[in-house]
Image (cartoon, rainbow, N blue to C red):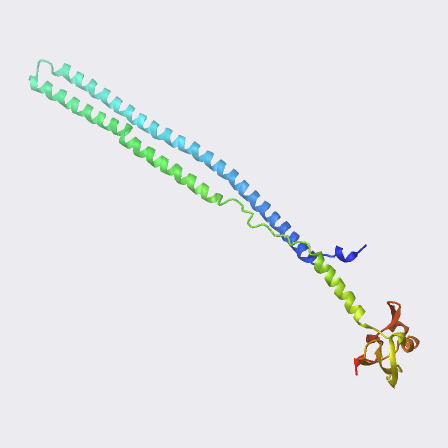
Length: 253
């Protein structure tokens, strides 16, 4: 099984995106619940406003009816007074005296009717307009407290899986590890000449690889394995040396 293809280079970014999405979902649900509670409060406020509106209209109408009743009572008293005076003065006064009394009665009745019409007309209309404006203002105030609904906003984008980069990173790591080992088996070299010894006791040679005229300076795996076996491993059937573990650098002469 090739484990390299299972590595996701975007794993960290995808985990961070999932965490941001969880936080965004939690915040949205919290704000949505707050808005729901505000909607419930708005509905209750609107119901209270409707009740208050109908009560105010009823009170205004009752006030007009009460004023009308007072006017009718006053009219009744005027008529009774008129007829009482007419009986007392009958035969003892001139005709003009009776007409003046009647005209005075009619004038007072007209005043009462004018007040009555005002109470059920202009005054009641003014009261109803004021009540309606109050009702609208209270509803507007309650609606303003509601605010705006919770908005989710832009979704959190999930980065795609990137197994190719992950595989390349692993391949690069393997290559770098492998690159630290150099083919140092004497079987791969020719024209080998010892030119010195390192402080740690590794013999230093100059050589070229078979089929290649380039001259190199380095060690032989067969020598190194005797001093430091951990610095040698088998690569493609030949011994190779990890130069990071010896005090000799492989270099071109």
